[in-house]
Length: 532
Figure 1 (cartoon, rainbow, N blue to C red):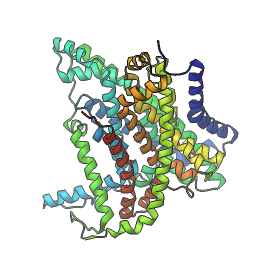
Figure 2 (spheres, one colour; figure 1 turned 180 degrees about the horizontal axis):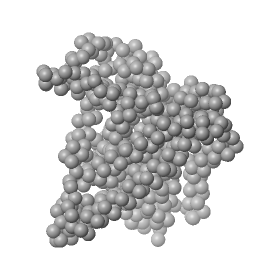
Figure 3 (cartoon, rainbow, N blue to C red; figure 1 turned 90 degrees about the vertical axis):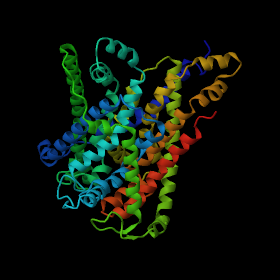
Figure 4 (cartoon, rainbow, N blue to C red; figure 1 turned 30 degrees about the horizontal axis):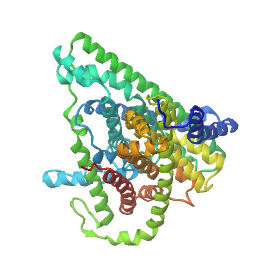
């Protein structure tokens, strides 16, 4: 059998180098720091100070993850997401949150539309649930942003299941389409989307930028609280930071265990329904609508228009649907400040995405040569550890503002698993016989790879690079803690401005951040479109 890579020793060297750069060294630095730094203060004091935040974090994580799971399972059997608007999942969380707030806030655009349609409406809404900073608002933002990711993972896994054959057998036994989906497909699908669900849960545990914008302040989420405490350089606060990092790890482990328990309960319950012949209720129409393509297109357009209007408005009083005055000169005024941020963001994202992309391709090629087609969860380990814990260990070991190389390395650590996850399915589904036939026609290993495999996988390869690029653009904590002065980015400035309450100026930076990602995705899709 022809091969396209050097011998086994080279394969092991490639794995070792990738593991050292993006797994062993990042984890080793954190483990070494935590093992050599004694905990200050007492556990009882830390629980008293951070207990409420810890419980709130666990509640938000479990509620958000469970709702996202149920909605994704309900929608995975519907129309598949196409690549053009599936890139919505790559919209930076900060830009999405800033735009969404103007839609759902008590005096936001949706409330104004209802006020205009219903004269008897007495707005704006007087409710703490829909306030700009609340637990409910935070959960809405997280659910709407994370659901497309899990939905895509569920649909991608469902494509590799023999659903048509199962459905034919189920119809022969009298199963309806809805009953077949929930009682036969969902139990098998739960196992396949276990890892993406855990990634969502870990992200929710450790996210900092979204709670800074829309999360509650009393109590704040634990990651938000630890982030704020780390800027206070007293012995007591640093002791709380150490304990808070440990609590985050504990919450992450507990969340994963409880979600595993939820999966077990769902499988047993659906199995019970299948054995007893009882009916399973259909998902509510609101859930079904949330998992259809038009919903995400409409939501993305609404958020984008909201950001655009906010960035150009001068005054916009309730209940007017449109601003009373415009100030588009704000863009020209801010351009001297945005331009260097764009340069920092693009250079950092392009370099980190390229390093992560090349590492993912090398790893996948080695695995394909070794006939290892299963997704190896170990390479996604950096997504299974709260980001705040990792970045805090790096900051306290190498120090803040340690240079561009350290910042580039930190971004690549988080870009690599997403590039690997995005490209894994398409790369291992590629029929390797094309490479063997190319070798039989006289092509060398590299020539066969570049002239046969790359043209056939150009779209997955391009989208994997674009995904890694978007992940780097969205990084807040690594930039804020490792290079806040020397290499600020659009994300750090957008969070800083918007968290200060200036939503008009924050929308300018959020749009620049969104445009950076959107342009890259559109170029990737346009450049790899099918040609007759």
